[in-house]
Image 1 (cartoon, one colour):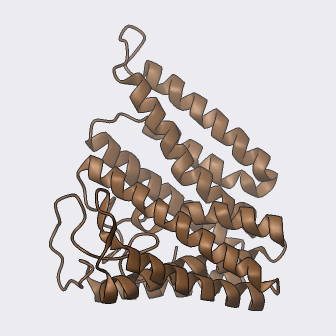
Image 2: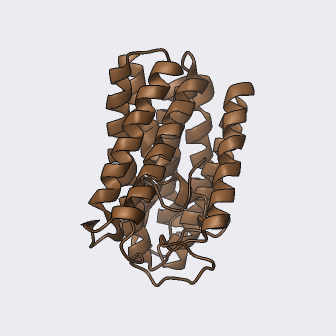
Length: 299
């Protein structure tokens, strides 16, 4: 999904390198990324998705489905490298079912696929060493598997549910624009004014100044997009803008803590200047859910 310059999620400020050992990338910005590459990739992704949503909106489901699959592969690979033996096959297959079944059957399809996949993961992990060997770390591995299933395909499925609503392509475009506004505002304010770390124990790069920049940009973006694209009450844009900054920032912090515990900087290397697909989805995923919730309730 589209993003901007460097940061994960609501790119709130940049004070120092993130927790895990930094890997040199040149040329790097003050945010610690290859800024030209990040800009080029972000702009290319953004323009492509805008074109898809405006002209062939159903194709968005396929593109997002591929993104979910790649993100699941990145995360499960990193987990297994850390000796967390999540059941990869049921997670990858079931994750696609969770995402795609929202198209024909709505929330019921998503919920049914989620429950079936969670149960399959439990049984798979129980017997993956055979019938004569008791599994080790069963509770930990199955709990993390269900967490991964919730974190990526379940939250991503709300983008499909949002797309299927009246003017759904514009609703998806609205929430994506607001996340980008949050990223840009956080990046600019964080680089220029960031002095006070927000949650230094989790992500030392984020500052309160960056968070305020995200709020300003996202609220302005919400006012404009909700009014001009959705032709709805501008105050809904304020509510949506504030809500997305909060959950996008939290989504970024969640991934930061996971990467910190795994001892890695990025989930993958597919996108130059950004990391992996999951490094671009961390703020989009909770934002999709909150956007569906707010727009479904208020419009």
